[in-house]
Length: 474
Image (cartoon, rainbow, N blue to C red):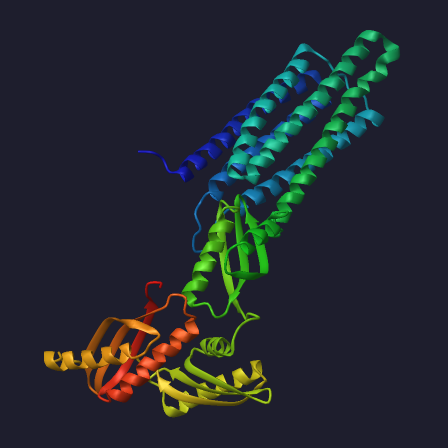
């Protein structure tokens, strides 16, 4: 059975970190032995550096294992920051070692003299160190880039700088070897070993400070450079997003956590707003391969929003629904009449309080509304009991309704007709055909006309629903 991608990634990261530990053990032992035998501070400095690399590699090895653990009840964002913490620990260890190396180098340059042997083994250990560091830095860099691991990247950076520091030590040993062969007047070249050690220490200090700065930045939730701007650009391109609010990004190990606010037309339904948020999540997720994206939706008023939409949006904000919103304009002011639907389990006093809050909110947002009158009704979806119609009654009603529709010249007849018996009379649903190019305002007027004519001529019909649909052209 094929392993999941997450397990493959975890195994590759562990293998890379494990190979780094093994290489560090071998190099530390080799350099320490040769350094003690030759008395070279440069090699001893490299041994100390490799010893610290061993500690750092061990920290990285365990950090990678812990960082890949899934979130739990105590660590809801996962364990990714263990990688960043391990990088900070490596930095502190390196800086402590550099202080000792620099102190010893200054002592040898100014105050004391140490006998150094530039032997074959001295050069050999540094050459082997360069080859090993070159190999493991490539392995670690490849895994770090593939899985966005700062801990592995820190290790890789360590070992790539080890290549340069080892080269400097070889240069110092070369000066010592020359001093031993060019005669007493060139004895000062022996100081090259201490100078090489000092240069190694300065290189390590520089690298350590860079690593430390990056680790502290992540631990302090500094956003990855440019990522927030990229997320804003991608989110703004999603249809339905009017504008963006705050975009916040934090990083933990290889994972990034994004929190952003998108502004959506407040007349959109809850389902439409949710679909827009999901589209933003998917698009931003292509930038943030590993982590989590949280999209918060803020409703905003559109510049072309009509009065009915505004009143409906205000009502929805208060948990109410409105319909049959009618407005009259008198000398620049509006008089608004509307129906407000409230939960059916409320008392009259409770319902009146909710509707009063709605009226105040409408007046606050629409100061041009002078008068506002509300009809309160419970939210219901009535299901009327019905009985089967006698065939002769149904035939008679059908004939009368079809005749009424046929008398309206702008309509092209009736395509479907449904008649149902209800407690207060008959309910009628009919589909009428009209010119496909007819403006929708005129089509609505025709539907109203059909409804009025049917109820006028057939008073036993209680409810009429007219659906106007396009017929065939010309």
